[in-house]
Image (tube, rainbow, N blue to C red):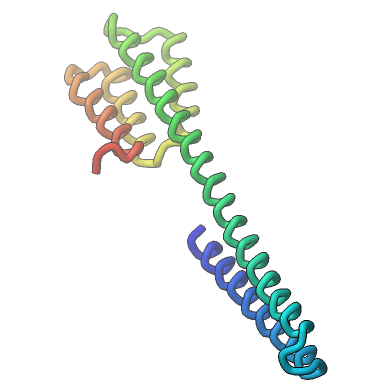
Length: 162
């Protein structure tokens, strides 16, 4: 994303420079045709200023809108991550309450992991899969440590801790 953003910035910069050069050449021609200090030169100077101001303002607003859209998208993704993490955590707590997992709970956990895979990092999915294999399926005793590892990985994925 950063590379395409830089290319876009350079392209916009080149466009601004080209507009400036073309307007300078065009209006320089108009200045040479009219008398020095005439009303027409004042109007042409004002037009140059307006043209450059409008162009630069439009480009700045376009970048600002893109930035706002990206920010809103990131907020929505963050909210969805938190919602999915909460649901998965509740599902694990429910599954661990009776220390046994039935077929329905196994299907719910599998579905929850698939949903988490849409938003989570590979490391998070790896930690979740390991927890499910070791603590739910293999029925190891140290469930709390594995569960806290999941919560810690969720926090890292949400960038709440480093």
